[in-house]
Every structure is written in structure tokens, then in C-alpha cells.
Length: 466
Image: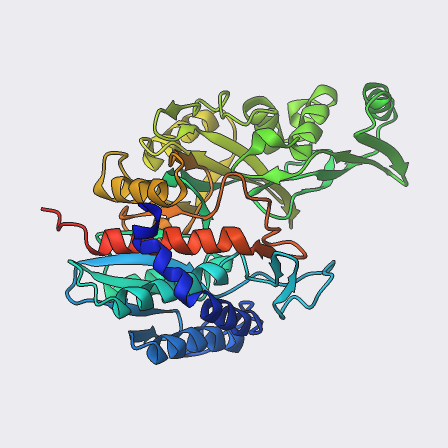
């Protein structure tokens, strides 16, 4: 009886309409493209946003399009906002699909199509949750907004523009991660270390990685010919299948393989760039390597904790700092190493930069901050976490775990007022988001719709905070 009384179950009345509109939204190939005024992420993304806002208007909701960056459907009045953040852009389809990626196809209990899981399914669920609240004539204490971004997959400025013009929320969630509640997201600091190639350097060319936020699984180097050094390299790698050493003309060529992983979890990979530099350090002098690669071999090593750099740290809220050497490049005599640092939510960027400056002092290298995203932390004893936990446990009957991540979600853009919450469940099969044959399971999707509505109802009607 208690389960029947849950407000979230009212979403079942709209489930057929949800699937119909989701199919239409999937059919729009809203991959971010070169934009123009009014369509900053290209026409397909603009079409997807237009579709969901027109649908919201048909459902009797108030809407706003913020110059094509993002849009909203809202219920209630005032400037104390509760937001549900989703996005209507998707990653490219890629190869390997068994069906048309931009046609929602049902096979058994699964619905296939690009965006079903990430994040169009959640967008349509949030829209119909607003419709259910409206139809039940629920009066809330806030203005409840379903916000639809258009540039999430390229980490663009869609929400930054939206919030600059529409104002920040006091609470909210983004169903673009996993259940339970991700209350902490580590700070993301990207740094470039650079140096000019010296006259004594023997490295003619070196390359590793294509993205700073990924563990490189391959690294290549071309080195001036030296028969003694060649013999030593062959000796050191003769029982190492992850290294290939060859002589080509007047050069020694080295290739190293590792294991790829996300930059937020470098411990799950094996860094080919670091392995290559550590091998070179065994064979060549600091003068022959040059200051940058000597620095990397001595201060970065094979570590993913930043220990030798003096930046190893952790906290109870979000865990340890992680360090990933993501890319090595060489261009016009300038050597560069790009790293990705995910730091605990209680630490500060300035503290880490100061420690890196100290580590660099004895080397003739420079470092610059390339990019920074401040950490997110929503206290576990906050009203938001309490309401979301209660909603999840009421619908599912399971405990709602609180966790942290080194990754990043839309929640980072909302001034520490929003947490990631859903849509995937702990026991749910992988949806292949970002891969071929992306899908959602109908039973789990219905359950997410129920949790989403229950959470929106409870947040909408929660007492005002002082």
C-alpha cells in the first residue's frame, strides 16, 4: 500500500508518451557542430532543443530558450530555483552499431539508440515529471526548472551562459551519472610543463597521448644513433614485450605500449609515456635527455599520486589526489608534457600550483595552468542530500549511497547547489553510453522515471531554507 501511495508512481500514466517523444528526440542527430549566432552548437543541437521546448509548451509548461545554449521548462514562481539538469546533445555515433543509431529500436526489453542513456532518456523523464506535477496541481515552495543543455559532450559553456542569464538554483540534481548521490567531484587542474630542446639533447622526436584526461597506451620516440646506447636499450627490453627497439637510418626508434584508462582513474591503466621516459632515464644522461624529460623521470616517474612532486594528498570527503601524465609533444624545438590532476575537494588549486613551482625550481622548465574546474562538494547533512536519499529509498527500498568521483558532471556549473543523482542503478547492466549499441532497459528506465518524479516532487515541496 505504501508503494502505491508514492507520488513517483504517477509517472507510469505518461510512460507511453515518454517513449514516443524519446523516439522523436533520438531521431535528431544532435552531435555538436560548428555553430553560429543563435545556434552555438550547430543546427542538429538547435533542433533537439527546439523539439523538447515545443513539447514542453504543448504540455502546458512555461519555457525559455537562452540563445541556443540551453533551455528550460518550468513550474512554479519566484527566484528560488530547484533545477534538474540534463542535456540533449550526444557524442558521435561511431562504428559498430547493429541498428541505426538515430532510430530508437526495441529488442526485447531494451531500447537502442544514441542518447537513450546519455542523456535524452533523462531529459524526457524530467520533462514529464514536470507535467505530472502540473496535472496534479501541486503547489511548491520553489520554481522548479528542467534545464536542457546543448553542449555537455564537448564540455562547453552552455550552462555557464544559461546560469549567467537565468540565475543559480538553491538545490537540484543532474541525472547524468549513477545512483546513489555523487556529493563530491574532485577539482580538475590541467598543467603544461614546457622546455626548449637543448643542444645536447639526443631526442629528435617524441609523442604520446591524444587527450590529457586519458592514460596513454602508446608512446613513441626517435633518438640520435649511438651503437652503445642502442645495445643497452635492446638489453633492457629483450624480455619486455611492451617495448620495441629498432634502428632506422641514423636513428633509434622506440615504441612502448601500455594500458589506456580514464584520467580520473589512472591507477586502472599503465602509462606508456611514463614507462618510456623511465626507460630513457636508465640509458641517457640528464644532459642527453634535456631538463623536461629528466624532470618527468625524476619527479613524475610511474606514479599516479604525485608523491615525488610533493602534491600527494587526500581527504575523507573525496579521497586521494590522482595524477596523470596525459600527453607528450614536440614542436619547433619546444617540448611539452601535459598532465591532468584531480584533487580533493578540501584542497586548493593555489596550494598545488605552489608545490609544483617548488618541484620545478631545480630544473630549467616552465609550467602553466592550462585549464581548471573547481571542485564540487554538497555536504552529506544538507537538505538536498536528505531529500534525494529519502526519495530513492522510498521508491527502490534500497539504501542510497553517498559517493565521490574524480570525473565531472553538469553539477559543477551550479555553484555547489546540485549533485549528480541517477539515472543508472548499481545492479543495472552497462548501457554502452558513448559506445556502439547504446541502450536503456525498459524496466530500469521506468524505475528511474519514478525516482526522478519522486525526487522532484519532494524538492519542489520541501520547506524553504533560511
